[in-house]
Length: 448
Image 1 (cartoon, rainbow, N blue to C red):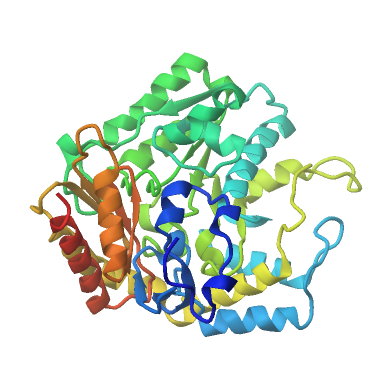
Image 2 (cartoon, rainbow, N blue to C red):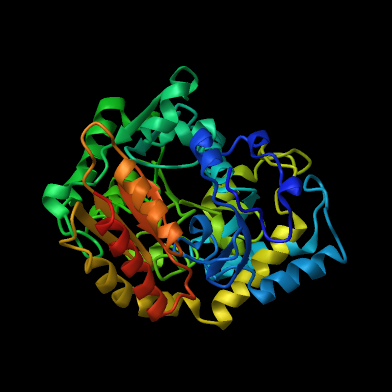
């Protein structure tokens, strides 16, 4: 436990850290060396000892408009004054419909309907259920198989874990994962695409593995393919030129739904609301979360085309069409935050700002090429990864030490395996981008 108590508290008032089982955290190590955040504003956190920590990952890829944006804060506070919660089944509240309308109007033309969840994990499981139920509704119930991708991350529900390709997330639960799932290869190849800027020119041929899986399993058994347009949690793996186009062609040719998991890529991370406007490839379903409220209130969901929605709207009107949902689907506070966040993105032109900053960001992060232990740098939009050479017999320790050094020197990054990931808020300045990269450079140099 740190010797420093959080701001405004004494050591005797400090909570017992052992009571909380932290997610995706080395709990024993953390509780000996805690890093507690007590406040946030704009692009900065405030640490327990009163230091300003520049947030280089937008929370967890979610605070795209920065922390505590006043217009979003105001909207949430105002919502609390009128309605705290409304039942989501057989009744609802106006702001859920308003947010769905605004979101569908802003999304690519194909998407006409939004189904709300509470998180990206729930959004991914929901999209998989929609895909399976869609085929059944059309009398094509033999399509039960789902295809994901190695290194893919689609949350921690059993559906998302099954389709996902993160080994550590799956291995303890192998006996309970959904049967009939197969995986495409990932597109990460340092030998062929190291230090690519934006989309690599090598790797489109990897999409042909989908043709192999279709031949192996028969298209009539495959319901959907779920992939991230850009793989975020797997280490900012950017799609090769032509790769997404070929995946789309194969899915269309064989009647397979294509699901884009845009929980990370949505809401300006790659300079657009969603990836079809960046990569020119339109899926059948889009999952979203994180940036929809700029991280202020949990909210996720799925965007669906009219064709998919209409397939469910058959039979007697008094019957439930899709037996799925959550107590907090479209929670009033979340919807108020979402409406305000969309207005902030538009009024402050933050997606254009992200596109303008992208070449500056790219140039800055690629300046780390040649630093000791750096074996690859990848970037797309305002997302980048710096991959480090693993230590023999001690994988991930080098990246962990860089993470700690950065935090101690006033910058919050993220590490996974031996990769440092950064994705600052869309409100970041050029000088702050420089500070992030300089801090990472110093941390790399301080790490043997």
